[in-house]
Image 1 (cartoon, rainbow, N blue to C red):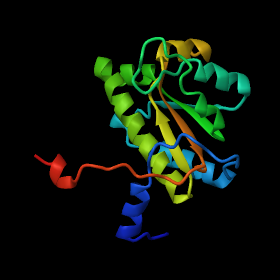
Image 2: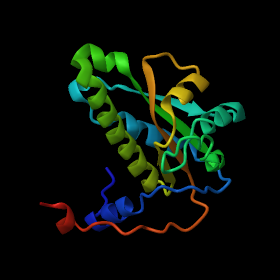
Image 3: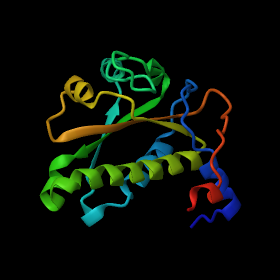
Length: 184
């Protein structure tokens, strides 16, 4: 088992920011396997494991995905605003499988499914950072347009787009609230 010191672990966590510019380097297969495996280890209420992943590979799929994106302020009419996504070597549409959640947990199941899925995304981001990879989580898209563009059934709902690769620019860590500022 690999042991990481407390300081190293916190530093790895501190480097996780949304990156919007990637180098033209492919992601090593082993690193991608680790990232996806870490995702699969995410916590899941009642072990529903409500997530589905769609690896976006072709340029047509990428264009359909980008056509559903909105600017960071979710401005109506800003469709296609996140064209930078094309530069990412790996693009994953993260979705929930609503039937799994609804059958076991009723209407609240969808809320828990989304929460669990975002925990799994953070696992993936941590694994990516350990491999020296950068990520971005995009939530600024119209889920109905993306669902239609990717021809997804009603019970598969996109909740995020995850990009993975090597950052083109040096990361600028944004200021964060201190622990004292978030505890009441």
